[in-house]
Image (cartoon, rainbow, N blue to C red; front, side, top):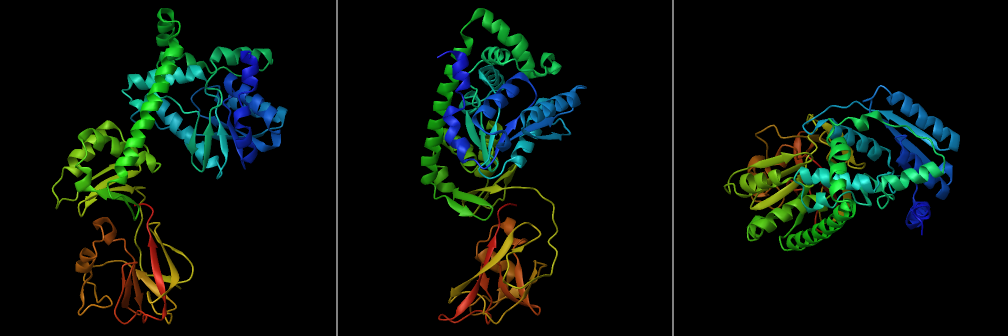
Length: 444
């Protein structure tokens, strides 16, 4: 099969996935590769089902012209067009990383549940990615390059052109007499990836003409290594008494520390990935092992990185979803015990009817308050009252939840504490139907 014929069939393996998708997006820069992919996609799917998404980074004086070109092209072929101009704030990894992060953030927001996003990365992009990550000290996952498909937000990202070179795509685009824009910033060697493309790869190609095949082979081996490491981490986690917790998960520290140092690091790396978090870097993993795992038993250390928090409590290591949102736990909040109640910290309260458990059905409304200090109560079945502080310790509520747990009041009387207990005199008999409280915490 000729390269041209193969390119024209690049989307065939995805036909059923495309047919079943409720939404089809395509990242359209206006460059040759994305214009060609849009053309190929339009031959497989009716134009009215496709939306082209253009990200205007504002980095070039020609950015608005490229956006207009992409819009005009979509209007010409009957494809819906969406553009978003983004403000870039360069952080520690520079403007390239900031642009990528902002771009994917827009894609993720646009994707519906089950939707597809097609991107036109090709084999030359893959080689550049592997070399770039190698020079940054990546491990097997990074050196495996870009996956052909992966989850993104509520949908899936697909790169159907990874097996084809830039030269293959260029020949096909010329054959089809397509027009596209050229980004002059691709020649600016101040950008790392441009330097690799314009300086490093030509020198490598002159000495090793088959460099691309060799690098792609190494990437495939790295992918296998990554899969094996992930399988080992999953097996190790099964033996660590993993538990679902409020806002995350926990594992047994005593069992974890019985693993070899290398397997501990491997488990931490893939524990995050398995739960759809970014994999922590080697530096972060080493900090977790020294500052959290290696801390005294009575200490309360924590490591926060991006959307994750690692901490310890009661000889267990916790991985928590950390959103770092600012909020005020204002009280009181009125609740009729029927509809789900969203609380200021984005946790929620809900109820269900349950035999022999929960609040009595004679209660039709409560006030939600938070700890102020000095509260006392007597959980059902206990001989005497105790301070709320002492009870929360006794019930082994983690420290990071103690100021957040909602307190349920009826006429200034504390009647229940979150989903932990109902206070004496406010519950139901064993054969009666009660209102059971559920407190759900998804992030901190």
